[in-house]
Length: 345
Image (cartoon, rainbow, N blue to C red; front, side):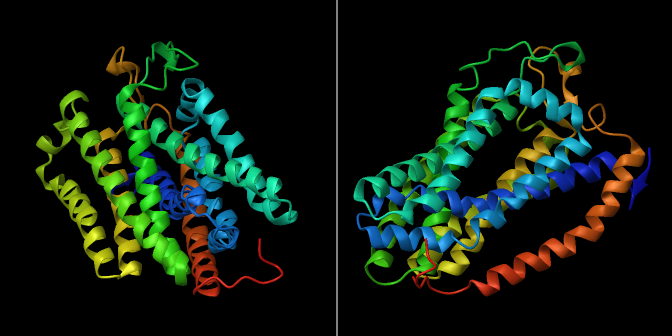
């Protein structure tokens, strides 16, 4: 098996896919989180400002989802096919909600009728909440495992089997984290009465997140089999949960000091460290089988050929700096408080 810097190609691609989806979670996290507060804003002006805060960024942030999905399909086609079979309903709902969310952003301010704007406000709020929730549900299902038999054949239920108690808890935890991230981002982009309103809402969001995070973490430690095994084997990686805890604890401290940019960084680090924990816990497994561990999808039995992975890793080396440069330019260009004009949503 070919390697680079002593790391085999499937492991490297595992890291690439993880990085892409981490970027998606961090950047789209404040997008979905901002939208999940939408109906908590009473005035039309406040809602327009909140939408325009993410207006120049939301479609660019979705690039991470497209690239991540493409990387997953290209690098681990077996995992891609198996997960879509097992999670068909949530993924179809996810795509539908993405379309509705995009439509709401584009169409809401196209007409001035009150009923028109209220309708799209409800669509926008609901789609953001459900997207964030479904992302957590999918992650919870991956941690729990799937009923996979020989040849990675999925034998579980279709319609509501993905809504297990643990998956629902993971869904609420993800939603609460995104809402915290979104409120912090909006505080950086707003001023005046809306800013004061967001200060109040952020406190509620942090209580929601800390409560759901504590409950889900406790359930994970007690009921998810083997969740601590890897840490017992490699104690050095205990640094990951410690860093995650410190990042979580730093968010309310920085918010209380009104250091919102630093708070946004630490809420982003919270997402990153939690996803690292998941990746470390699963490696080298991608989709665990609850029927027999030998039927699990791993980075080795799901990977493309060594030549394909090598070519794609070369493309990553070339493309990653371009993507980073584009994002830096975009965020610098649209930095600062939101100012509405004739071209605003």
